[in-house]
Length: 261
Length: 284
Ligand SMILES: Nc1ncnc2c1ncn2[C@@H]1O[C@H](COP(=O)(O)OP(=O)(O)O)[C@@H](O)[C@H]1O
Ligand SMILES: [Mg+2]
Image 1 (cartoon, rainbow over the protein chains, first blue to last red):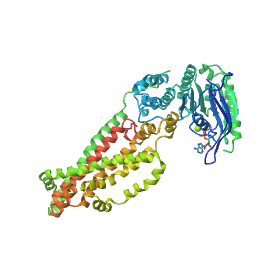
Image 2: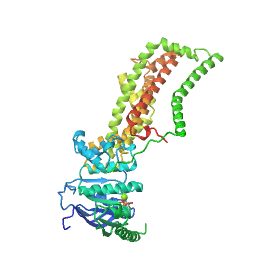
Image 3: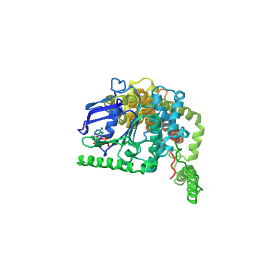
Image 4: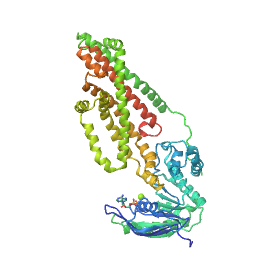
């Protein structure tokens, strides 16, 4: 490492207008190209952090810095950021193609100009034969894939994912986990992945940041130095078990720290 | 990446066959049952008049009404044309006005809060009591009729479209913001499409209401001037105790209303059947 971080969060705090202190004094640096999981109990402010990073919510205190990028007057970096929500969040009235086209369309790309890029993104998630389908015709896992394709179509430097697979069954989730890892290794994005699953975070990430609730803050920062590519043999290895236990212990103490829930 | 889940075709089982037959029966029944009921009603009407020896100038037999419909056809069809002109002009303005004002409301909560009460007041005040004033203030009878029908028709479109524009998924809104969408782009790509099912629901109501508005206004406007719509024919026929013609005109109005409703239903289906829950046939 030693490189400049892609993103540096410094002592951020967020208090909602109803008085809820969602975050307090939270700091972390995100290295370029890393796969970081944010792990924490529900309500500890994971979504709030992601939204703040994406520029979708304002801060009460602290700063978000982008050391390697030019920032605009709103403090947003000049490179692409994409967001994947817990629900697929698709436009029901639009085809798969049109859903993935949207981010490019908003930048003025016509259907023809966007075609190659959209098809490439659909190909990445294995859905190129479904371009003309409507979301309702797809299974939950396929909808999530469309959502991921839409996030990838702008070739983002940073991908923010808010419990993207939480609503899927385990088999589909494992499959999407593997596919996501493949893409990440191939394209070298930075990923911040919110989850409340210890197993998912240990399997996917190079680093797990554990958060506690009320107020939301970082309570543990666990390195997962296992090499990629990771596959089913990693899922059954002793190393994996050790990382899971470490994360799980940290999560338990985090829950106790905020046990007046 | 591997291909997504696929399913193999299964042989059809007896339960499914029975279900398919039931669906077929339902399809036929949907047309046949109302038809049978209408025929029975007409026969019952005829018998009632004959058995009770009701004179034709009080309740005519269906045959007489049909006769009036045929004999007065050129007269009635002209009036129907006039009424329809008003109905559809009013509906068109209601659509433009209703959607336009809804979009304006969607731009600013303050505008909505300030002006929505006016829309409600216009809606809840019966048109029959406003119409006489309108005909005093507005010289052109056509314009007066149009205004009346418009007042009745525009509210469902306004209120439904306003609701629809505000019902766009909040995550999608966040996404629009993330990608730096302009206000116009958010409206065009997110809020208007999200409002479409709501708008079409409003349109279904407004279609019928604009006809009612046009007819009520014609009644108020009375018999002077250019008034020669269907309501005028009914008034005129009632002065002359031409009961069969009254029935004929009423039937024409009802049929028109039904046709408008069916057309709006078709329009809804046309725009929504590919994606919206309300228009999708479920298999269970
Ligand atoms: N818009 C809001 N207004 C008030 N409180 C909120 C709002 N959004 C989130 N919160 C509160 O902030 C805390 C953190 O929320 P969130 O970031 O969604 O948690 P997580 O994603 O970890 O489950 C919770 O206590 C939640 O109730
Ligand atoms: Mg959340």
